[in-house]
Length: 332
Image: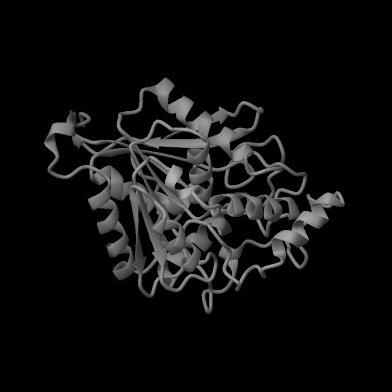
């Protein structure tokens, strides 16, 4: 419901909450409550903080496995739920609608998260790993000005819809419906059921049945974390943002080094558009993970190992001892 923010995290069998979790509610400049969590690095060398930015309709519980990976590499981890989804405040009376008034409102979420990190003194340097919608929002924000991050890795960024989920005229149709005052309605044919609760067979998200079922189990335990299909305003805003990102010269404006990981078999976003965007970057590159579907960090062990190897090589750490400080072990 609008105004309600979940403060706890949900644990399910096979998906334990990582040790050392602290969760808070942060308020954006326009008063929206966001659920945010922090995890400390495991004892040893400290390399900074990784910020996880989710895709549409996600929630931070999906990323516990990824949180543990980065903690084990010596990073603090921060994650949050975007406005209107997960444990964060909803924007419509119907809590199952995937809604945002305009996509630039997500800028306020990013600003609130970094302000909280600054206030809490989260270890620097800061890095971002962003998936799908999160990657597109981050790129749009970087195009409007700098952020206090050293590098960013994007997983299957939402730079163009796959024809499987949105025909070419979807943006124009959504703009017309929004102009008619119908922006808060579900897209035609849409409804309240989460894509994560659909049967595994022929799903668009992952080839890994165990991880797919794990994520569905989270929503079974906590249905309030899920949202259904997007609203007309969301599609209109997403389409406008993607057109801006594809404008000539936009990619060259990005100064932060980028790693783009794209899925070889993506039926949610367009890998072709992603490759074209990456070719225009001044400081960035793209890697295609063959055989992978949209959610790269929820994929099979074989695909996920390639993703993590690329992330580990790109995000500073490992033997770069000049960057490290020691994190003391917590007394038993």
